[in-house]
Length: 325
Ligand SMILES: [Zn+2]
Ligand SMILES: [Zn+2]
Image (cartoon, rainbow, N blue to C red; front, side, top):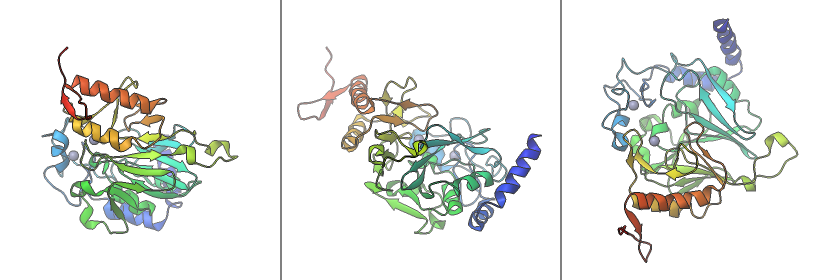
């Protein structure tokens, strides 16, 4: 009786979530969401501006949002549930994927919990879960415009600030309706806690960023379920791409159209990340991890990338066309 199960589950959840969250869901329930990229707009429109981002002249599978092709969150809000992937890092998955799969990560740190990137679908059961975490939710952060999605609704429903890089502000479709205490537009680096740092890298988008988790700095606890690994982790979304083999890294400007990133942007990302300790990297793409030796693999992958795209380093570390041997 799956239908009955859902109804009972949602009624139970309704009594467990704050009025603030119900109000946020109700206020935004009629806003259109692009059926392809999950971008939420403040009003119906005939196209999706995100279709033109990152080298796409169109979405890979659709024509962008219209009032008829966009789906609303309330219609699509049935089966979003948190799924466990490790003691302190969980993926919030959506099943079935009714709009573009835009997964979110839930990080449970000693100082509190944080959400990295955003799923389009937010349901009362998921709100109930996220508002009753063992370590209360502190903030949300989004890596780049492809994951902006319904993030303002999430932030309002969950009562936490939302961090978005200032260089991507023009693509944040709901910037006009967001209050200063709701969305924090940051630049350079931004601390979320003593162990979490947002790092502006650029490349895929001007404000594309990664999230560094200094897990080695998390205090040891007797609670084995809460103990994090003692190595640093980079959550990279699309800014740095973990290859499908999970043995290397690459860099894409446009993923749908397979246009690689300019090598100067690749070197900039490498320089920005050089000062951070990490041993593993997780992409937002499902099951894309480099689980060990990630910093070394990163540097090796950069050299492979430069060579494959026809460049090498000159004497002053500047890029020069690769000489044929
Ligand atoms: Zn779209
Ligand atoms: Zn992207």
